Length: 217
Ligand code: ADP
Image (cartoon, rainbow, N blue to C red):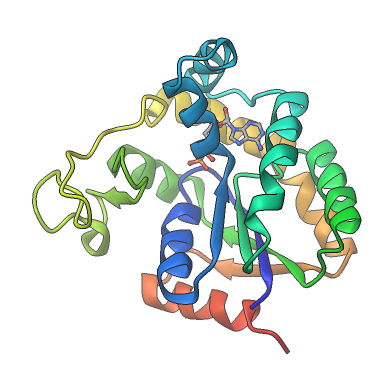
């Protein structure tokens, strides 16, 4: 399978597809959002400064993100990997290209999950996540509800709402996406790496479409 770089507006379903690919296709999953939230939980100095930025919906600085990814990326290279939430700016996309070149990692595709803003709002307001395994569920989506009310199917731990999953913060996140992240689509298109997948289909269909794109030729 190819390495996948996901590009999508907030709450399009990157995390949900990633869970599926990890469980069924043995992918490694690097989510910068999860790494940043771990940093906050650890209570480090860096974590404290991140908390405010993330709660506002703005992007964390490229320097911090690149340092984080640079230290972690190497440990994700044993299997095909997913980058979820990174790159989010052109600077990050260019830096990633250099990193992958230096590491000799080829066989990469960028998958754009296409979703209208109204549907993303619906998903963000219904999202609840497992604090232990990070799996995400959705109360506004029949296929993504937990089996038992508010408990993770796998860990049986109480599910939580993310502090940035509210309508006001979503608006800031969506604008940050339009301004900073959508230009990356042209970057990957120019490198013939970009594949577009409709995120409005049934989940299973979306999974299958992604697998088709990610299969080695
Ligand atoms: P989602 O994809 O659902 O919007 P994430 O968990 O990927 O959420 O990201 C949550 C927040 O973490 C972002 O709003 C942003 O503040 C920060 N963040 C995550 N990844 C990056 C990145 N690559 N560059 C800058 N900020 C990031």
